[in-house]
Length: 540
Image 1 (cartoon, helix red, strand yellow):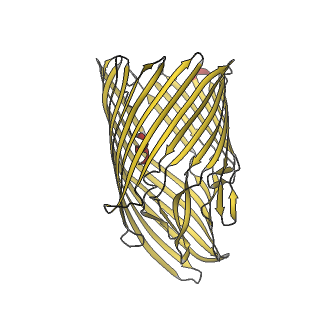
Image 2 (cartoon, rainbow, N blue to C red):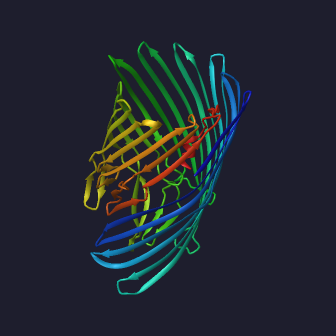
Image 3 (cartoon, one colour):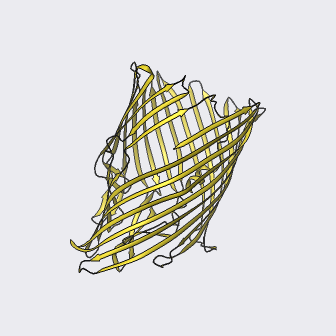
């Protein structure tokens, strides 16, 4: 990976930019056991090895003008291209019927990806009398294409063989226009902010399978989203209070071959309140906060097109998904280098991985999809200690998460309420001769998350050594991530009332990285554009 950042400044003008290029390789191995309980017990044992390589290029150019200490405007252009991204996923699957081997399949899948996006942001940030103005205008256009070529060979229990060849071509085009305006001013001893945001998105997904094994798809999602928000904060002595309200209206139209599908076209109208109060008691600072969040499904999750993983596994989205809503209540406390946070979440319409039979006459073929979950509750606790002891700056962090989640399994109703904990121990040491050493440790326990269960704990160790030279112009850093290649997860998902999926993943995430950074005449960018429509961009 190579990256160059630059900035040229004269009078009130700034011209800045970035160039980035990378070439990456990686691989991952995975074992999956899928059990299907019908009149007979079907079991599929699969091992998958996937290696990939990609080339990426990013560029940025921005012009900024500072009018005075209170006002500035600018425009920024970002470009990204992945001209080359190839992967070969080889899967070997053994299928058992009531414990007896039924067939074996070798499924090499060659996948070729390419993508490109353009993004423009223009902003004005200024002040007129008591009013502060923050305006952002954004445009975003991206295109991606994917080709997959699957060449399968199956050996049946009687010794006979058969084979098939499957090719799938997928093209996606995204367009986004967004605007956001925030106005704020002092009012009644506090600060009042209000504004609005508008986003238009258009996404087209074309999926073609010349062999006719899965259906072709030509679908489009067009959305208009408008939001208005107001927030007021004020300090009463040592007490800081904040109250806010956001209203969102989202109109989504779903088209198949340019014909609107009413069932999959939806309108949403929602209010999101925010309340918080911060206050000290003796030398301890407390904060109590409530807010509601929304997470809309990604456009990929809303697709109706089908992907073929191998002979036994098909994958699709769900255009009927509803957004996920979360009510959050949090209490935090801070005393010197000790921080404590506890909270409660009420989650509605969480998005789960689910399965069903693709063909009622063939129980070996599974269709992976998505569905909204019933509402459930979660609690969490987080304690962080960050003292400084001479040249040693340790940080200990203890996290605990617990959910109350019921799921239907082939064995009946199951309560997935075992807690999960995480222990993080980070260390920073200032060594002689200007060296800095980081040694970080993380441990994650087994436990439950949504409709899944981690069956074994996992841990990892990261280390880094760095030194700055030439009056901090030159920095050399050596990192080792997951040093012992120990972070491997063993996970079972309860994906339907007749199927379970057990996955053991061994990613190649033991990494050694050397970074050399040289900077001269360095200055911070004065560009203040923050973008509009960010949540919609992330969905793309």
